Image (tube, rainbow, N blue to C red; front, side, top):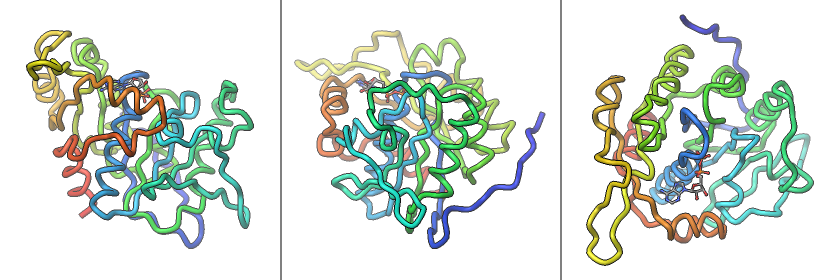
Length: 261
Ligand code: ADP
């Protein structure tokens, strides 16, 4: 079954966005935003111009991670102007247009869809090498809106160890296939804990099923991230960009770069 591809609109006049890459997950809370942030920072560290479109409208965590809590995007010449992180990553998110970021987003589907379309087509992104889209979790109609409205070149699927057991990954794969968007590969987040004393890797959820699941769905395994309390605290404190170690998820970063070439 193939979903119909409607007419896609381009970004705002004068903006050039070379590559749009989605980060998806079968369900929420598995670290999709963290992986989006890591990819953005790694690409930016290599000299690319990077933006993040936070399409996880009802659970936006990107602005907080990047220390933008309480910040507001403004409009200029009828376009929303994305905010820039300290490292120069441009960010647009529902949290940046809400009066009070603690307010729940009680928008109905069409309003959410409209917001995402606006973040794409009426936003002054300027020139970007990569626009990373932190997708809404799961396979909601909002996720479909993103695929239908933006020229997503490929998606990285993020999963937790439990997702790999329960085959939640399959839903994300199916959705991408239906939308005719290539799956670039699979990342396992919170795969293990590193012992602070002896650096041994402890697998609280049992041995990793990353490779097995990737093989099952004919995907590329793009690496694992440990449960990292320091990183979690940095995300909460808004200092992710300054605290995240260099060189995380090298296979995933390389794959994104290759897609762009
Ligand atoms: P999602 O975007 O899938 O909803 P997030 O990236 O917002 O998930 O992560 C959910 C929460 O879990 C956040 O508080 C985040 O800091 C934390 N978290 C995610 N991945 C890790 C990790 N590898 N180690 C520690 N905490 C993590």
